[in-house]
Amino acid sequence: MLRRSADGLLSRLIGAARTISSRAPARLGTAASFPADEPLATLPVAILDTETTGLNVAHDRLLAVAGLHSRGSRLETAPPLDYLVYPGIKIPKRAIAIHGIDDRKVAAAPPFALIWPSIQIFWHRRVLVGHNIAFDLALLRHEAERHRLAFHPPAAAIDIGMLYAGLKPRAAAVTLDAIARALAVEIAGRHSALGDAEAAAAIWRHLLPALAGLGVGTLGGAQALIARQRDLMHGQGKAGWAVDLLLPHKLRSAP
Image (tube, rainbow, N blue to C red; front, side):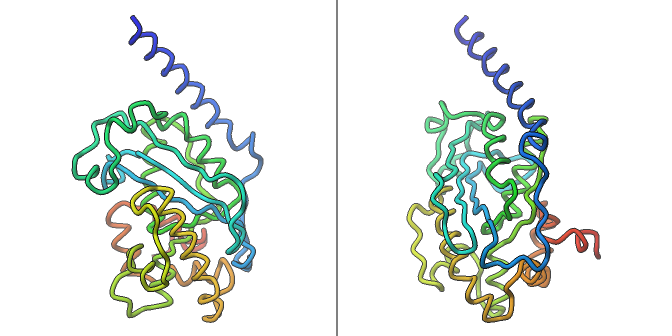
């Protein structure tokens, strides 16, 4: 009886979350659209990272999501986004070995449908920034579809790995660890969503002056640099990642 009551309450909560998500655009106002000449130095960004049950964006599930707000390179003082998420499936041992999130840790965590409105609010009127951010976006888009929730993408998205590849075309690797080592960024809490988001924020701060030195000081310039990383874009696209969201609208349908 108690189990049935709990299941019924969860169903009602998820139904309410679907209603909130469907009304998000009206509640939050018109989505932002940043011009190509928007300066990176003052760009409002949301820096995000996730932990998941695996790397298959169509089938794996969200376990944790965290993020920070920044204006250019300056972190804002608002509390971070930071959630554990109940995935609704058993977590594979290979995933637990990486991030340490097991079934026990997420047993009392909210399901995706309950936190999805908070994620949408988090990146509203901001450019989303992260390492391999097209992976996070693809997984979140599939989660929204799985739960029959509306997916409202961020105004734009920037992958710091691709930016670094543009700055350092001879770099042997553009993993988060490799970039952090090259820039002397310490990662506290590696493979935790918040720890990796904080590392991505520190890398973003280091990249902005380097990009400016290369003459890349605007959103459009950053997007053009990302678009030139064809091998990375191709590989991520084959994996089903949301590389379309890394490009300005005028390039998304280009060959």
